[in-house]
Length: 151
Image (tube, rainbow, N blue to C red; front, side):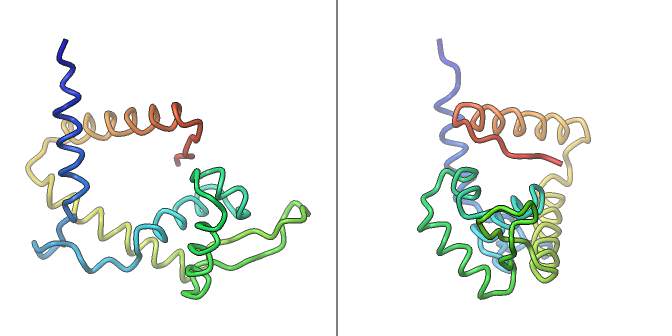
């Protein structure tokens, strides 16, 4: 039985190579955040302050990788270290006002790009695509044992 998974693999590969378009029609290179900072800030925003250990568990990355990413985010003023609000020993990372503004700006640029790409899609097609993407992601998260919180 051909489940079309080869076609999905190929299209996913193509998706990963495409940069989203800017609202001016060119390739989107004007992003304000790099990919790792965008994902890091998104997770901290939705979950609240997190320690290196919590980030490591959430992302499935070793602590040295997370130490580099959080150090870069701190140097850029995107996150700050705070005492654990629940009184634990580990210090936690919290998104700063600057980090929140830059995350909002990046997200808005991506949404504008998606709006441009899907300009001639029906609302039903967009809703179906979003539902399939969510299902795909939640199944990956389930298999990996790392669910991602959603708003």
